[in-house]
Length: 289
Image (cartoon, rainbow, N blue to C red):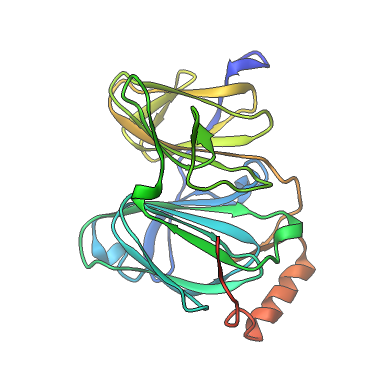
C-alpha cells in the first residue's frame, strides 16, 4: 500500500476493455465503459481501434447524432472523412486529431478514405458541464503538424494534444474539465514524469509494448486507472513503448446517457429524443472551435 500524498501516483487497477463493434461493423475495443464513468469523470468512453483487415473498418460510422458532450478522435494510422449536418467536411489523417463539441446536437459521419492498410486510433468522449450542454456545436480539425511536441533529453517524445507538459502547451485547451491528453513515445530505458493536479482523474492506455507505472506492468492494449494519491505519474519502459496519458477535472454532476446522448436527467434525454425526431439536429449550425 502506498502512503498518501506521495509524489507518484499508484495504479488502482488494470482494465483490458471489451471487444465490440460499432457504426457499420467497425471492430474496436471499448476500454472506458459506462460502468467506469463515475470513477473517471469527466471521461465517458474510450474506444481503441487497430485493424489491418478492411472488412473490420470499411463500413465506418455513417450518419449518427450526438448531444451533450465532446468527442476527441486521434488517428495513429489511416484516413477518415468527417462530414456533418451543417455541410462541413474534413479529412483526418495519420497523427491528426479532431475535437468536436456536440453541444446542443448535430449529425455527423466518419467514413474511411482508404480501401486497405492499417486503421488505428482512439475516440475519447469527454462530458460537458450542465451549463454548457446546449452550447452551439463546434469542431476543429487538427493536422499532425499542428500538434506540439516535447522531446526530453532521454529521447522521450510527447505529442501534446490537449493540456500541457514541461512548458509545452497542447493544440487544445478546454475550460471546466481541463483535459490533458498526451501521446507518449518512450525509447528503451526511457522514463517520463507528468505532474497531475490534485483531484484530477487520470488513466494510461498502452498501445505499443509495455510501460511500468509504480512498478506495475501495463502491457499492450491495457488501461491503467491511476489512484488519486500523488502529485505526478511516472512511466518507464525497458523496451520501446507507446501510451496515451489522459487526465481531467471531474464535474461531479449526474450522468444520464442514452446511446449518443449524454445529459443530466432522464427528462433531458426525453427532450433530446423529441428534438432529434423533430429534425432539429439537421438544422444545427456548427461553429469552429
